[in-house]
Image: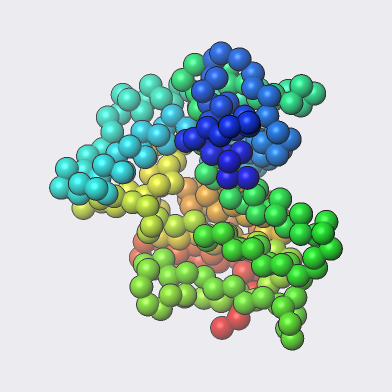
Amino acid sequence: MHRYYDIFNAYDGINNLYTVNANAGIAPVAVSQDIIDLILAARDAYEITGGMTNIAMGPILRIWHEYRSHGMANPEYATLPCAERLKEAAQFMDMRHVIIDEQEGTVFLELPGMCLDVGSVAKGFAAYLAMEAGAEAGMETMLISAGGHVVAMGYPPGRGFWNIGVANPDGGEPSHVDTLRTTNRTVSTSSGNLRYFTVDGQSLGHIVDPTTLHPAGGFKQVVVVHPVSWMADVLSTALFILPLDEGRDIAERAGAEALWIDMNDEWTYTDGYEALRGN
């Protein structure tokens, strides 16, 4: 899955998302069904979240990755990208120009300059495929942990639930600030405390708001619990970006439970989330 969804490297013998991006505005690319399914899920996610999770934001995210990498390596010289450069890149983030031909098994980015970045959905979708593969092999109990994204299926020995820790958004001790008791669901976390840089005293994370073209900064951390792995992944990203009321509305419509921790360490959570708390 990593090789299929990699946007930075090519691999012998396969067409992956790097290949798709390299052929933007040139030609459709024949890809595996796993890539087709990922992009179809991302299209659904775009609609469900009102465009807050958008895999066509690659041109914008590349700019921020460049400035974040430079700022993390050279904090004293950290700067913001200019508004004009971001505005120009935003011309290429329209999902309508991501063309999927399911019959031919191809993906085509219509405009030169487009590129996909599947960071908001790929981890959750790969975990979903891993869980499906385990189920097809007859496994009834599984725990898949993929860096802030945990899929819990079945029951651990001697208990009717899994204990899933909610990481401390500030890092350090205690390592966890909450515990959820759940099974047959995914717990996905989005936060700004791992990949960020600082400009003029302001911390700028890696989750970018497609409406402002700047990193979202309303919350320290958002946790989403949902039965579908990739849906939990995209929802945690969207709820991290959106204002609380809008995010709560999307969570309710999608059948998710959620926790928001704001910049003042105030907690807000859904009624169903509170019912999962084990402490």
